[in-house]
Image 1 (cartoon, one colour):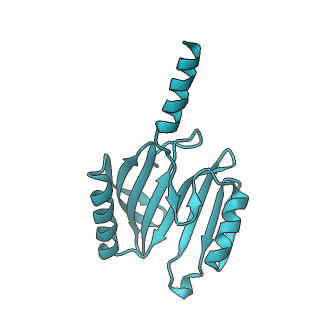
Image 2 (image 1 turned 90 degrees about the vertical axis):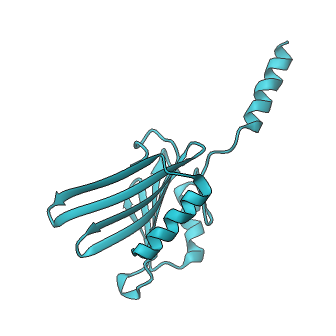
Image 3 (image 1 turned 135 degrees about the vertical axis):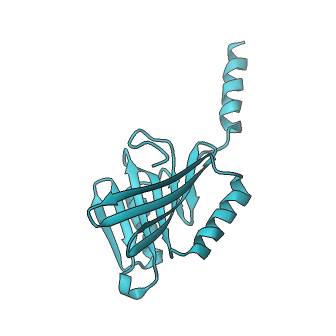
Length: 163
């Protein structure tokens, strides 16, 4: 009976889907060193430690490429990734359509406005679950800056998801 129980739990473990995001070559659970190594093939203008837990890779604004990744680490493992997209209604609509087609209707939608030291901030964010992962499309505007982010988070004990 004991062997049957062990076999059952082992089979269940292998039968459960893997809950980990994968964006291009970046996979949740990677170490910072692995992310840095993978970034070499992208030839970003800069790869910078924003903090002990955040690594940012980007091109200079004058280049106009709008390429930026922000990698967030929890317990030294990749647990969150934000990818900037060129902010526009067209790109927002394409991203939303793609996610709705693949994951269905979002489980959470945030629409908010606030006042910051540099002016009004307006934000519209949509979140989906894929297994235990949280995927998001977030459009924000703090004039004159607009931002469109694709977010990927795995459950972790460093921040609450969605964020």
